[in-house]
Length: 289
Image (cartoon, rainbow, N blue to C red; front, top):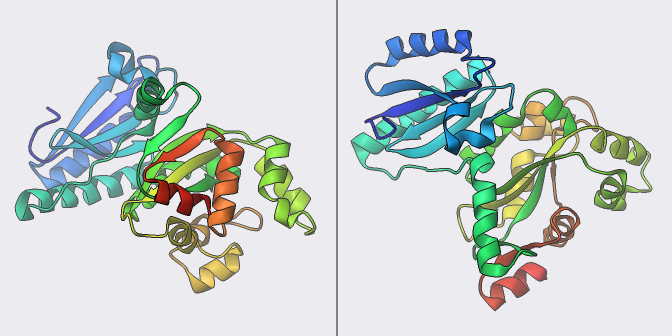
């Protein structure tokens, strides 16, 4: 079924909570609107070993397949986001079928991180987390305020649509010492203690990202994508940026980005000390500099 022509949306649910009835109704409505190239299926996580990672979670997960490949993931019964993702992915797949353009395939980090870790351990040893890419990376953080407001999936979808590749996606609650180290350059500012309290007060998402275009400066591209740190400035100067769209009041500006390459390397070292990038020696030297 996953190889059926068009787009297939799989509702992964738990036996103890069942499929989400409002979402089933939404699927039926959209199916009537768009026609034959859209298919829906339901999969009980407890019955399929490959979905073991989804067990024990109270929210449903929706996996989007085209041509047998995973092209999008939505977590939670977010009707507007599901509706938008279905229409966007269906439009993209129709272009693949009609115009022969390349299909954009993704990996669901929930399923792939452990597999990649096992593969890397076998090749490089247990102490290293290695990404075999000749491209630079940076740290991106979805802050506790955005996580608490249920905006993680929307933000991740926008990150992927903007051409960033998510290499690692980890939910973590920062310790106070990690937060102080992260913002050490702002230690003399009046807002510093408020930042520390906010960032260590709940779970956030730590992402390692790169650009799908190898020659693009990921640090600068990410800074431009998230917008100015001040929310009102972001809304005025870059209204489509993540901070303009998801920030509320300082310091709740939804996302974090490193200011430059040196800071990006330092921050990656704080949260992912064993993370290494494989590639040519020249690439490594450039990244370290």
